Length: 332
Image 1 (tube, one colour):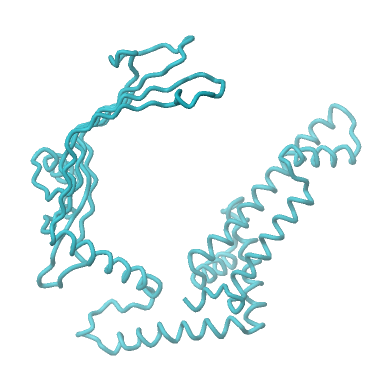
Image 2 (cartoon, rainbow, N blue to C red):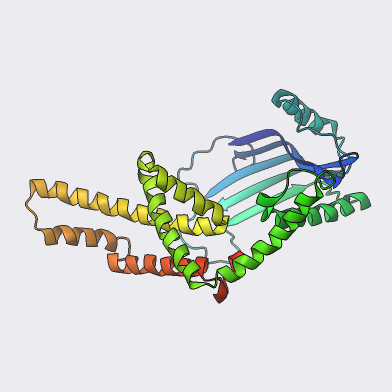
């Protein structure tokens, strides 16, 4: 059985609307008084039921006071201590002082599942039957809530665009140092142009490919033996991570992790083969065949597996270093 009580999920924002002098704080979230899921008998009385030869399973789901709110003029909770925050979150559930989009509702669901292992041939015999009993479902949306949602969505899109250029963003205000902000605006556009045209230079492509290959080797060593990575390798790793974005780094690291995983599997199989050879003399060809068999159990041979890795490797390199062919990450 599962029982959950006093659930409160909350998002609050004091940055999107208004200015430093007059901030407009809003919040939205979900509250639940209790949620329980229990086994029951065929009369929907909660109790432990031993499976045995029974062909049906019964579950009783009870939901109490589920609500969604959007407060257009909210109080800030984030500046409180952990204990104060917990008390405030719990007390706000019972007070019902929010601007609810969905006012608290309760529901009961009786779920019946057919445990027959054979396929059900009749359309009139469902695998799962659910009887849902729901009270009134009051939905309300005010003009102020609706307009705040639209403004917040636009602000979120703006923040998503600004995220790509945050590393150059000045830490001062526009009024205090307008020159830095002009330099920031110029740098953003110049960087787009540079990446677009530098990426089409073959010397850049070759150097980027070398950096990626070296990064993969360093990252593999970082995964297997992090204490043995040299200072020079750490510096190269840091430089590459500063030049590439998240998606590019994820692609390269996936290649490194896949290679490490295959090397560990191959090393384990070779170790097992050598251990077996100490008790029974085995020729090198048999050891090689055992490694081949271990790959065949997974449905691929070493050659096929290598082709897959190489194919993904070269497609990744093309994706990263050939922006002129349609994958132009440096122009974003």
